Length: 439
Image 1: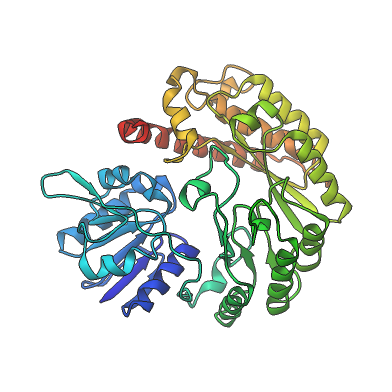
Image 2 (image 1 turned 30 degrees about the vertical axis):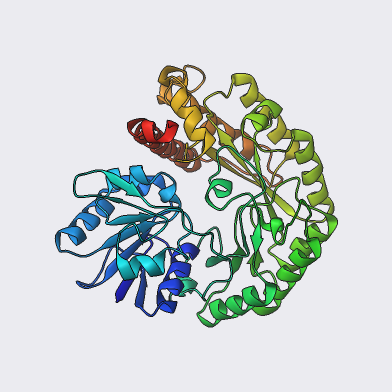
């Protein structure tokens, strides 16, 4: 069978992996990031964002493929609530969760009850959801690596390498522990390094290990294997060259001297913490499992190890108060982070935040309520105003002089408006399918 694996806009690791699974099952595979397919190709559409379900180009592509009698299957993080996918896209079936144990049989038999882990629409309009698929191992076939991988830039890296799946955390805004589970499944170091060599052969210049919580690699029964993490980074750096490895998204309660030394010695020298808030009340609501004091200690430890520290923050949670927000501003001032990333709380389907958002009246949700304070003339929502204000505020406390020019001011403003519009659109989509989310 001729198979096209399409990941719109970017070659995700998941798409590369699924391509390898299809190839290993005996199919001819083409990996693409554009919405193009040959007449006889079966399309595996890998979608990682809820927004993609509403993309007119994706919708039109799927409709055209179906009208010409070609099969289109959707997989990826959007599969958490398959009813939404089937309601917005006219696909043949949705692969729910991890696709390795689903795909070979689906390509062989097509959508039917004999294929576990899928959802599809019947001729009478009803939806069938088959029995769950067995959980796959992380020892999978080599991914399909695109020839132009060197031209891709994902937060400074050409690609992310999967080192493990799952997260022992329970952040209410995050899909990872719901999609992959809270038990961490780790790959073997020789297998990962073999893959790193293949990426380098294909032209990759910088690689990053899988996001989520990098130091959870070989985490088991509540214990970190810090030596394995250090060995992994050392091995990757030996192949790719010094400072061509990054290790993003470390939890503040998942570090040690060994872990920080390894990041310093074998990576670009940055630690990216999901700090999210400077309010302990909000951290509890977010299910972070860590406190502001934990963040204080972690940032100080990174400074002691000569590392740059970046932090991500989320504003506009349905129940975030003005006091919570002011606490975040105070902490940013004291932390003096080297870089800051700010986003408005997006209710991803399948997360507790999505449920909280649906249960919060629209006129009480800061994503929708108009801002009446300092930035009222800009016509922002309260969540947008907090995001905009926090970006300006954070720039004042970065270690190096950072001037907010008119151009940067306008860029921040355009960014928060775009972010706010997307979050509102997603929230409205969830409202449309709230029965399937809340029941």
